[in-house]
Length: 409
Ligand code: UD1
Ligand code: MG
Image (cartoon, rainbow, N blue to C red; front, side, top):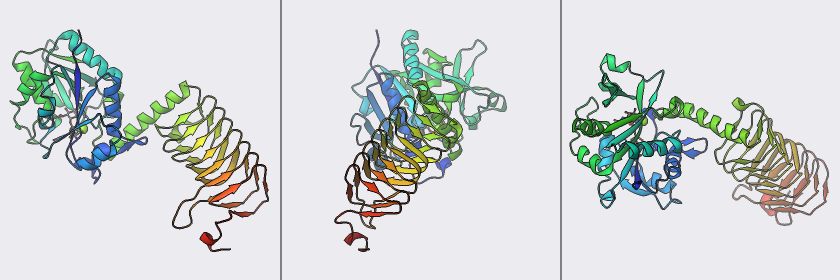
């Protein structure tokens, strides 16, 4: 019978190695803060009660997740290590008994399937602690998994505390653990900061449980690719690339053509319909929705709030922001379309600019169905263009009340 499962996500660290003013877990990976991926993976693995430990710039972190009232925030006022971060959750979990997943907030590549498997194995083995490990060609920077001659788990040693022999071990700790909640907190009481960093390590709690004769199981369940935690800007870029590959593979599986994945960047929040073709050097950033049978790029920049209905072309050197292009509309070359709603089958001529900003405020434009916008036109917002209008090449089109805002020319 399965027991309830809660999770502690460790997200209080400042991260000196990132050299940053921003809390590490708020750094974005393909458009979302890295912590959001960890929260989602826990939820998708069926964990409902999620506690996030915050410290460095906690208000900024909590504010970023204000739309997610289910997360329980616990403050770690001083960052004394991963074990200490778990310790401060004692009160928040006083009424809880069951499985307790502890996971670092700096590993957005974690998969819900791996967490689900970890919990499943933990229950099946009836262990005090189960951890998922990974085998890495280059284990530098990770805690090494120590096993005895029979392969039984003995503990985890941090890189800085490793002997030169231990440093050669390629099985590492990606930081996904499932503990028996009660046993974890008893073990944490006995963790001491006697290591090179002078920190309380969660990994020591595991060793304490093993030495007390409790069952500990290590499952080599984490694909090498997923194990990477983000501790530096280099890791951030590398993880971003891996995440980007995942996003693109998912899109391709659902019928999107990405002509050159390496020169294409697509936000994790973007939605793209079947048979749409994305040409090289396209950058899709933010909540962008693209329908079916569209053509995007090459060299297109689609920003937050862009909606392309079916059969739309947003071609070469087009920048789109917070705009809707309805079915069959074509903007093939060299345009900026910002804060505009464009109807069906509109021709947006080469070099069309929507002048949406008057120096103080942003304004919207509306363009009716089957409008023809001649090349090199400037549409000065706020503006409404009636359906079917033919705008000659090189026009400056103003709305009735836009002249005073724009120098009255
Ligand atoms: C940790 C593991 C290491 C593992 C690696 C995987 C320990 C002691 N080491 O090392 O075995 O291989 O992750 O990526 O656990 N945090 C707090 N409060 C603190 C300290 C850290 O909340 O006082 C948070 C950080 O914000 C971070 C996470 O815990 O999200 C992990 O801390 P980090 O310093 O990145 O640990 P690693 O050195 O990566
Ligand atoms: Mg880390």
